[in-house]
Length: 295
Image (cartoon, rainbow, N blue to C red; front, side):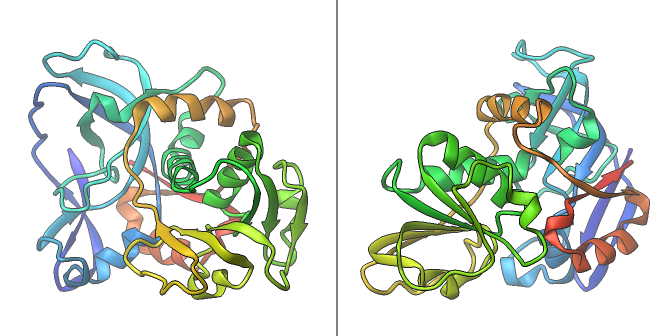
């Protein structure tokens, strides 16, 4: 099989032949149909040292595909099942940007009928990040501002928070208001003045700037765990490190299938052309949708 890897000292990912990994108990091998690009893929490919990563690493987080082999003890999925999942170990030598990926069965969810595999590949990281970020909030309702609400994580966060009972305002870049109109937010904003929110979910990565709308003693939850925001005014500041969660993903994928949460695909590129695709995707606006790589 072939995998997309990054080597220390070379900022350009390479498509290389690799031996398939044997299956441990509870592992599943998936023939990858599509995998999502994230900015983190470009970042780590350019600089392993910052994150203390090995000299050789695989790339790619979320993926979809078809089960081709199951390990001992696996009965939740069978060969031929369409699945999606998240490979969250950045130290592994082969990950989602590959012809095949091996993950624990608990990290997978079946893809529902009516959801194509390319769209399914764009769901796991964004949806689980949004869900797990909301789980970090101390309370379960109140006033919530979601920044970057037209982007991938922000779209999911806005829908999930509104469904959970939050009074949500969606903050978007001017010109993208239409992308957030149907997400369940009470208001779609392009700027915010003053302090008035019990919590801010900073899907846009505004960092320190996202503290301004939070009331004293409120909460800021971010999506950049490696870049902490110094707290102020007794605001609790936390950030999410997204984890694989197959059961949660199984509950989220139907929301993409029935378009409760719109999933946008910006472009589709071959994995073997990842060097050019990473450059294109890294320069694109998040509101355009996910970039998808296919073997």
